[in-house]
Amino acid sequence: MRMDKLTNNFQLALQEAQSIAVGKDHQFIEPVHLMVAMLRQENSAVANLYLRAGADVNAIKQKTQDFIERLPSVTGTAGEVHISSALSNLLNVTDKLSQQSGDNYIASEMFALAALEDKGELGSLLKQAGINKKQLAAALERMRAGENVNDPNAEETRQALDKYTV
Image (cartoon, rainbow, N blue to C red; front, side):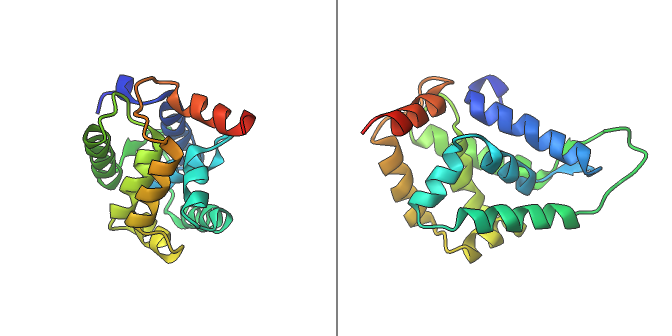
Protein backbone atom coordinates (compact mmCIF):
# COMPACT_ATOMS: atom_id res chain seq x y z
CA MET A 1 0.00 0.00 0.00
CA ARG A 2 1.31 3.42 -0.91
CA MET A 3 1.59 5.71 2.10
CA ASP A 4 1.05 8.79 -0.07
CA LYS A 5 -2.46 7.53 -0.85
CA LEU A 6 -3.47 7.66 2.83
CA THR A 7 -5.10 10.71 4.36
CA ASN A 8 -3.00 12.63 6.87
CA ASN A 9 -5.08 11.30 9.78
CA PHE A 10 -4.62 7.72 8.59
CA GLN A 11 -0.85 8.20 8.30
CA LEU A 12 -0.71 9.65 11.81
CA ALA A 13 -2.76 6.74 13.15
CA LEU A 14 -0.37 4.22 11.59
CA GLN A 15 2.57 6.02 13.16
CA GLU A 16 0.82 6.04 16.53
CA ALA A 17 -0.02 2.32 16.18
CA GLN A 18 3.67 1.63 15.62
CA SER A 19 4.53 3.72 18.67
CA ILE A 20 2.00 1.82 20.80
CA ALA A 21 3.45 -1.53 19.66
CA VAL A 22 7.02 -0.40 20.33
CA GLY A 23 6.07 1.00 23.74
CA LYS A 24 4.50 -2.33 24.75
CA ASP A 25 7.42 -4.38 23.34
CA HIS A 26 5.14 -6.10 20.83
CA GLN A 27 6.75 -7.77 17.85
CA PHE A 28 3.91 -6.96 15.44
CA ILE A 29 1.57 -4.05 14.80
CA GLU A 30 -1.85 -5.67 14.96
CA PRO A 31 -5.23 -4.32 13.78
CA VAL A 32 -6.12 -3.48 17.40
CA HIS A 33 -3.05 -1.22 17.68
CA LEU A 34 -4.30 0.78 14.70
CA MET A 35 -7.86 0.88 16.04
CA VAL A 36 -6.67 2.19 19.41
CA ALA A 37 -4.60 4.84 17.64
CA MET A 38 -7.56 5.90 15.49
CA LEU A 39 -9.92 6.09 18.45
CA ARG A 40 -7.41 8.20 20.42
CA GLN A 41 -7.16 10.87 17.70
CA GLU A 42 -8.65 14.24 18.47
CA ASN A 43 -12.00 14.55 16.66
CA SER A 44 -11.61 10.94 15.54
CA ALA A 45 -13.48 10.17 12.32
CA VAL A 46 -13.61 6.51 13.36
CA ALA A 47 -15.11 7.27 16.78
CA ASN A 48 -17.61 9.61 15.12
CA LEU A 49 -18.54 6.91 12.61
CA TYR A 50 -19.04 4.27 15.31
CA LEU A 51 -21.18 6.71 17.30
CA ARG A 52 -23.34 7.34 14.24
CA ALA A 53 -23.72 3.57 13.84
CA GLY A 54 -25.00 3.34 17.41
CA ALA A 55 -21.94 1.74 19.02
CA ASP A 56 -20.61 2.34 22.53
CA VAL A 57 -17.26 3.91 21.60
CA ASN A 58 -16.00 3.99 25.18
CA ALA A 59 -16.56 0.23 25.49
CA ILE A 60 -14.69 -0.35 22.21
CA LYS A 61 -11.81 1.83 23.45
CA GLN A 62 -11.63 -0.07 26.73
CA LYS A 63 -11.85 -3.55 25.15
CA THR A 64 -9.21 -2.81 22.51
CA GLN A 65 -6.90 -1.35 25.15
CA ASP A 66 -7.45 -4.39 27.37
CA PHE A 67 -6.61 -6.70 24.47
CA ILE A 68 -3.38 -4.80 23.75
CA GLU A 69 -2.36 -5.25 27.39
CA ARG A 70 -2.76 -9.03 27.00
CA LEU A 71 -0.60 -9.31 23.85
CA PRO A 72 2.75 -11.01 24.44
CA SER A 73 5.82 -8.81 24.84
CA VAL A 74 9.19 -9.56 23.28
CA THR A 75 12.36 -8.18 24.81
CA GLY A 76 15.75 -7.76 23.19
CA THR A 77 14.45 -6.71 19.78
CA ALA A 78 15.56 -3.08 20.19
CA GLY A 79 12.26 -1.63 18.96
CA GLU A 80 12.03 -3.85 15.90
CA VAL A 81 8.36 -4.11 14.99
CA HIS A 82 6.60 -5.36 11.84
CA ILE A 83 3.10 -5.12 10.42
CA SER A 84 1.23 -8.35 11.13
CA SER A 85 -0.29 -10.32 8.27
CA ALA A 86 -3.75 -9.62 9.74
CA LEU A 87 -3.14 -5.85 9.59
CA SER A 88 -1.63 -6.12 6.12
CA ASN A 89 -4.73 -7.96 4.90
CA LEU A 90 -7.05 -5.38 6.46
CA LEU A 91 -5.09 -2.54 4.88
CA ASN A 92 -5.55 -4.23 1.49
CA VAL A 93 -9.30 -4.57 2.13
CA THR A 94 -9.35 -0.90 3.14
CA ASP A 95 -7.60 0.05 -0.11
CA LYS A 96 -10.10 -1.98 -2.13
CA LEU A 97 -13.09 -0.40 -0.37
CA SER A 98 -11.67 3.07 -1.04
CA GLN A 99 -11.21 2.29 -4.71
CA GLN A 100 -14.77 0.94 -4.93
CA SER A 101 -16.01 4.19 -3.37
CA GLY A 102 -14.18 6.26 -5.97
CA ASP A 103 -11.84 7.84 -3.41
CA ASN A 104 -8.45 9.17 -4.45
CA TYR A 105 -7.15 8.86 -0.88
CA ILE A 106 -7.70 6.18 1.73
CA ALA A 107 -9.44 7.56 4.82
CA SER A 108 -9.45 6.05 8.29
CA GLU A 109 -13.19 5.47 8.25
CA MET A 110 -12.64 2.95 5.45
CA PHE A 111 -10.40 1.01 7.84
CA ALA A 112 -13.27 1.12 10.36
CA LEU A 113 -15.49 -0.52 7.75
CA ALA A 114 -12.81 -3.05 6.73
CA ALA A 115 -12.20 -3.96 10.39
CA LEU A 116 -15.55 -5.75 10.44
CA GLU A 117 -13.98 -8.31 8.10
CA ASP A 118 -11.18 -9.04 10.57
CA LYS A 119 -11.18 -12.72 11.53
CA GLY A 120 -9.35 -12.01 14.79
CA GLU A 121 -9.96 -10.13 17.99
CA LEU A 122 -10.82 -6.75 16.44
CA GLY A 123 -13.59 -8.11 14.21
CA SER A 124 -15.00 -10.11 17.09
CA LEU A 125 -14.87 -7.14 19.44
CA LEU A 126 -16.68 -4.87 16.95
CA LYS A 127 -19.40 -7.45 16.37
CA GLN A 128 -19.83 -7.82 20.15
CA ALA A 129 -20.27 -4.04 20.30
CA GLY A 130 -23.28 -4.46 18.00
CA ILE A 131 -21.75 -3.01 14.86
CA ASN A 132 -22.68 -4.59 11.56
CA LYS A 133 -21.53 -3.76 8.05
CA LYS A 134 -24.90 -2.49 6.84
CA GLN A 135 -25.29 -0.04 9.77
CA LEU A 136 -21.72 1.15 9.43
CA ALA A 137 -21.97 1.65 5.65
CA ALA A 138 -25.15 3.70 6.13
CA ALA A 139 -23.48 5.79 8.85
CA LEU A 140 -20.47 6.33 6.57
CA GLU A 141 -22.71 7.49 3.75
CA ARG A 142 -24.47 9.97 6.06
CA MET A 143 -21.14 11.22 7.40
CA ARG A 144 -19.67 11.76 3.95
CA ALA A 145 -22.88 13.22 2.51
CA GLY A 146 -22.08 11.71 -0.89
CA GLU A 147 -18.60 13.24 -1.14
CA ASN A 148 -15.47 11.31 -2.06
CA VAL A 149 -12.07 11.60 -0.41
CA ASN A 150 -10.07 13.57 -2.96
CA ASP A 151 -7.73 15.39 -0.61
CA PRO A 152 -5.29 14.12 2.02
CA ASN A 153 -6.88 16.58 4.48
CA ALA A 154 -10.46 15.48 3.79
CA GLU A 155 -10.99 14.02 7.28
CA GLU A 156 -9.89 17.19 9.05
CA THR A 157 -12.02 19.32 6.76
CA ARG A 158 -15.11 17.17 7.29
CA GLN A 159 -14.60 17.15 11.07
CA ALA A 160 -14.22 20.93 11.11
CA LEU A 161 -17.46 21.33 9.15
CA ASP A 162 -19.28 19.02 11.56
CA LYS A 163 -17.81 20.83 14.56
CA TYR A 164 -18.32 24.43 13.49
CA THR A 165 -21.45 24.43 11.33
CA VAL A 166 -25.11 23.88 11.94
